[in-house]
Image 1: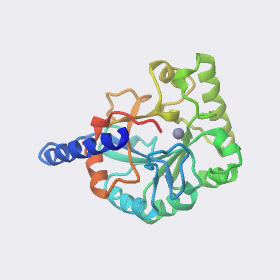
Image 2: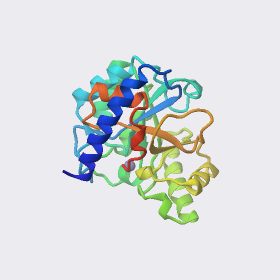
Image 3: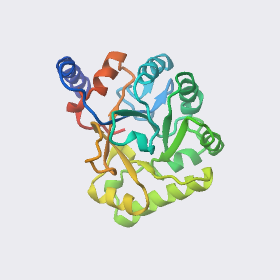
Image 4: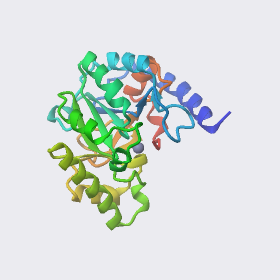
Length: 253
Ligand SMILES: [Zn+2]
């Protein structure tokens, strides 16, 4: 059994117990940001097969999420209340072909974080520049930065961090013709230095891969998310939304 499978089994058992207990507790107020990647297409390096969810399962998740208070990223209503925001990292083309039609069906806003070089490399697995332009006009879609070359920013010097982020931000702003202020750190890797540099460049919200909920007392450049897997049933999703999986702390996608 792999270390990941063991970790998942332990997390499932613990979260089930915590989740059952949490039914009797006060609801956890805060902003919950769920994180997905691809739909029905392979994800590079996804050895555990958890980052490409089936369209059928994503429809079940959106149907569940739609009953909650789903807020687009960056909206004033999403801060300080109990809300859910839906994000997709890396800019897979299935965001356009599968996610957006489901967002329309269930009336939920969705946010995609793009790595500049993934878009420019011409690989059909990823969204193209013309895809991105068409998405920018969609009422339910908002777009943020996921780096230039999708590098671990904590491993780079200050100048290189600034270069990676400003190159990606300027490219995206020029392409879609509006200001971009949200950032998902590649691999979810961030530290105080990287968060401070990103803030200095004009980003107002930074999203990590640390499990948890966000409240107004947290640093807006270190917003935790809830990593949703292809194996997550609606029951698992609900328990993750209640905070029962925060024991996992961090993932690196
Ligand atoms: Zn990524």
